[in-house]
Image 1 (cartoon, rainbow, N blue to C red):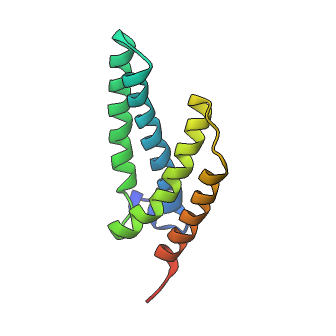
Image 2 (cartoon, rainbow, N blue to C red):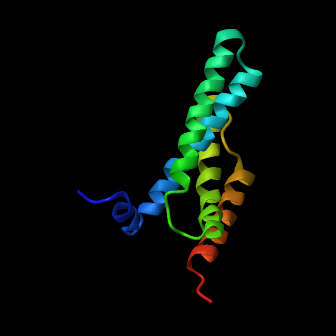
Image 3 (cartoon, helix red, strand yellow):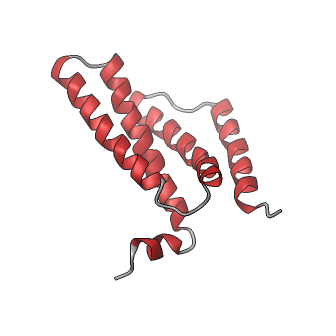
Length: 119
């Protein structure tokens, strides 16, 4: 069995981790949004606790990579934005419009510059 570091070091695995981290962050944030604006009583507290646990998992997953922090989070923003749009559509029934999709395309270009431009 390989170690976690060896698993992450394989090509493309960091992108998978960033995708998982993005969905964890957006999912956790959506629980806080529900707690503040859509629930009350016991459901509110359940949402706060769920959001706290999920956001803690996000913090662990996003920092597993050994990429430098600035590049890591610069690339992560692309995954976060995509996850946010998908969760917003699935959970709150608000699909992304053309401006959101165009903005995401620009973010993808910026992430490519951050990750692959060698000086």
